[in-house]
Length: 357
Image (tube, rainbow, N blue to C red):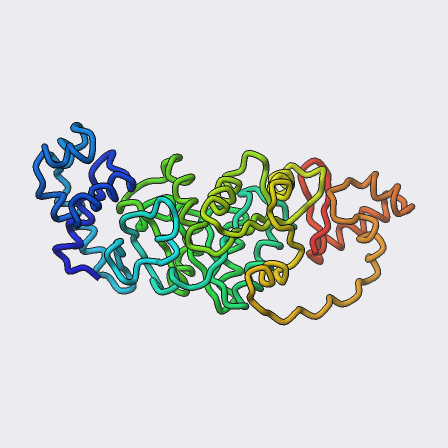
């Protein structure tokens, strides 16, 4: 780690409005270290960046924010890793746009561990949520850290599954590392902090601005060896992460779903573009060259298994089930209630039901 003086310069340069990581690295290439950039003249800076930005660098007034960040980094389990640090995640050095520095809370060594990104819809189906957690748990148990974005839906379940295995989990934030978004995930963020790692490239106190989240996605994929998309609509931000993963030379995996579900269309589009179809965590692990024992087969069903077989795995309503099973509506309704209470199916909007594996 840099001494406090060097780190202060790294942080101060990162706080220059409009600089961005690409121009930050251009300045490093020209001047060596941030302290040299901050000591350069306007004419020298203008040879590397636009004159207006050179003026902004010279007119900076961020001493209070720098001091706040240095105090934050002194806390237990906290660090600010720069491109000059040996502990900077090696995986991020492989991507086209590595951040000059990252704020890390928790186990910083986890950022250099073998990892897999698991992403998907914020409004996932019950089956999608269960898939995310089950896949993440198995992959984590095999030794992979699970990387995701702490959003609601698939991200949250991926983190929970990661925490249930030995590989743990990494949450990449679209805010400053001192802000949890969404607030509903405060307790989950605390769990990740205690047993995994939180990471952000954004300065402290940065709020949840819309443009930050697509940008942080390159770190979700960049920290991992591959990216698994569980469920995603065609306009999902998860597809951005998958495309970034492909651009970074990472493996892209997708779980297929119903041809009638909007939340399967993003995964199906990825599969058409060459993503690897996976039906189990073993499929991912074999592609990555990681071994794991296969799980024992699930036990046979109960008295309602006939209705479950009729249901399949696509959403359907009571009328469809009556037609498929040959049972009266009253009997189907009673069975559906029992199956839902047993956690074997889930009720969906519009009077639909879906089987959960």
